Length: 142
Ligand code: CA2
Image (cartoon, rainbow, N blue to C red; front, side, top):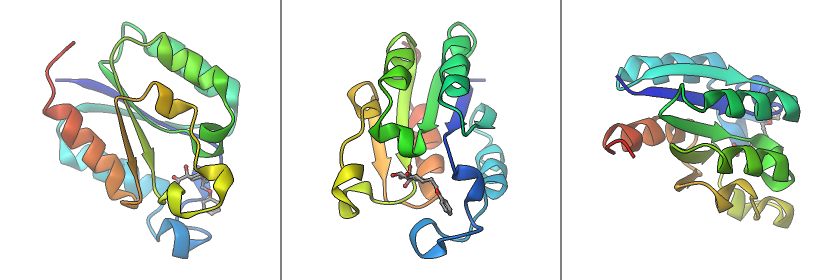
């Protein structure tokens, strides 16, 4: 079975607890449960508020995981370190945003991570994670 690492950046641990108008009512634990319930891949699900921790996990994914689904949170808009780590990863990368970042403040319109991502999903709510897994499951190895 395909091994997929699902990474979540800062403040995504607050999903479902605040700002439900923007991010919906599902918690990150709900998202993890839904990802596993799809049963399309072996899913490892992680969240960190720390940029270096995310970089370490991406580096460690080389040779272990076939693909990465990442919601880098606000680091999307600031982190060349996460972009560089993803660029050294050979498998597919899907960037997910719960909200439609292009309909929000101008500073959310640019993502460094999109420079490496094979696909970008924004605005589907937490369904975006499931869409990413479905798309990856339909792709061959590379
Ligand atoms: O839409 C997304 O998924 C984002 O990656 C979420 C980030 C935001 O900085 C990005 O621009 C877009 C924020 C993470 C969630 O932050 C929360 C804050 C309060 C309550 C719930 C979530």
